[in-house]
Amino acid sequence: MDKSDSAAPAGTAQWADQLTAVNQAVDPFGIGASFADVTQAWLAHPIQLASSLADLGRNVQSMQLSAWQAAAGLTPTPVVKTAPDDVRFADAAWTELPAFALLKNYYLLYTHWLQDALFESPGVPAKERRQTTFWARQWLNAIAPSNFLFTNPVALRKAWESGGQSVGAGLKLWLDDLRVGDVQMVERGTFKVGQNLATTSGAVVYRNELMELIQYTPTTPEVRTVPLVIIPPWINKYYILDLNDKKSLLRYLVNQGYTVFVVSWKNPASAQADTSFDDYLTKGMKRAIDVARAICQVPQVHAIGYCIGGSGLTALMAWLNREHADASTVPVAHWTLLATLVDFSRPGAIEVFIDERTIEALEKMMAQHGFLDGREMSRAFRLLRSNSLIWQYFVHSYLFGEAPPAFDVLYWNTDVTRMPRAMHSYYLRRFYLDNALIKKDALTMAGHPIDLGRICQPLYAVGCEEDHIAPWKATFQIAKHIAAPVHYTLSSSGHILGIINPPVKPAKRSYWSGESGDGSADEWLKHQRKIEGTWWEDWTAWLARRCGPKVAARPLGSAEYSVISTAPGSYVHEI
Image (cartoon, rainbow, N blue to C red; front, side):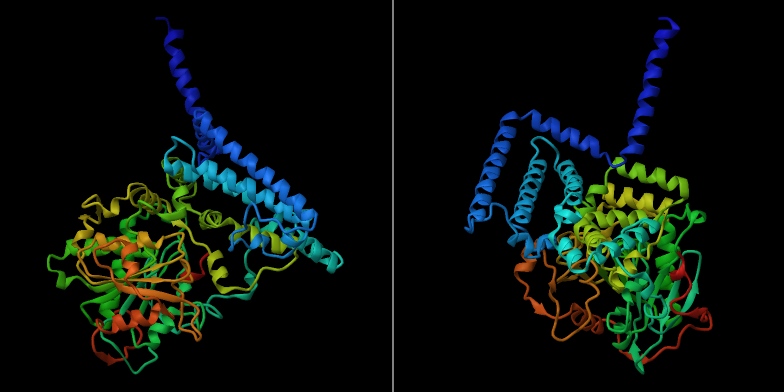
């Protein structure tokens, strides 16, 4: 064999590697490959393809007949119905004006057919079918007739009634967003952290390179013996728990007579690229618990974890039960999880971003900066509900000329944070991709293999009925993986509003609550009574039975941990 023969395979391999690199750069989520797989699958099943196309053809004919009937003044039976929660076509003009009604109906007909066809692709793995359908939905949502001035009757009506001023205002808002580089959801100038957000009185009593620990000023002369330590998610800032006087979970707990601590995570930069998950476990969560114990001079606390903070707290609980041979010496007496996944086998809508190809693309992105920019994470979450989180604001701002609302939850949602490269890569791979958290001794953290089956401290777990980030039936699975009694509560609404659910009259929301038992989530729900109101009251009653007798209210800090600054501290202001 001569040199040219031996060089050919190496050159071919190099060319293939370069082509793969280009493909990953242009299409990091593998959208093109997914659609190619689905197309090949349908072509390999011509009989099923012909049947599906025939169904589409019959529906198109029915649509045409309905159009003629409507033109003749009749009221035909709708061929395709608008979903009740599809606000794009809620205005009566989409039904009463024949031309726009026909346009809407054709759009919905083809949209439903294409999504159904993709989801039912023969011979394609279920996860790939879901991913392909998701990306097709993004394109279909983008081309909806409601998103264009001349095909949106409401936009045309507003333009006529305002003498064109709505169009001019929309153009100005579009230019403003163009400078920002995003479709803005909220009027940001209305809010300021520490002034009309995160205003509950307290102080930073501990600070390290990863977090600040805030202790809140008591409002009752006596407090429960066992303090509460809250671990919020590090992908957002903690003050979702302290929006304002009426919505603040922190203020509510303080007013109920609890000593409350909350972790405020640092917004990491390139210098923190190598910060590991172990660091978040030991220097973050465990350190916060130890400081709270020392300040309150108690052996144990009640720990609360929200979303990813709850996943981290679960890992810490397993770690502590391995560290302490005697369960009574574990520094957490009992705990609460809010909208938290520990079993990531079905992680909800975010599943479309969880595969080897996507994680590799994110790791390359993080390698350049040392972190994942929170804006990238925010865009991904907005895609999960693009109609309500992107196109609704697109239409109202640019077509209607309406400025974004001043809404505190949306402001918090846009106050993004970053994730260190090492920690985030570990979390995506080991928790989401490998689902290793529920596997006995599959993860070794801070020197210990962890096993959720060791956890024996009582748990109060909360899921949210409409949660698309941590689906409630997935959060219910915690009961199957720990050796502790679990009191499970299902709150109405979604990932945020199901948790930020203060007592109001008349009640806006409801919940179901009871011991988890040994059955499935559906079986559990069948035996629960729907209760009007907020689960906060049920939870604090559960806490009161476990957090000990009342003692004199504690001052902020201690001789060992003196007050550093007033709440909300400095880390929450980092951008």
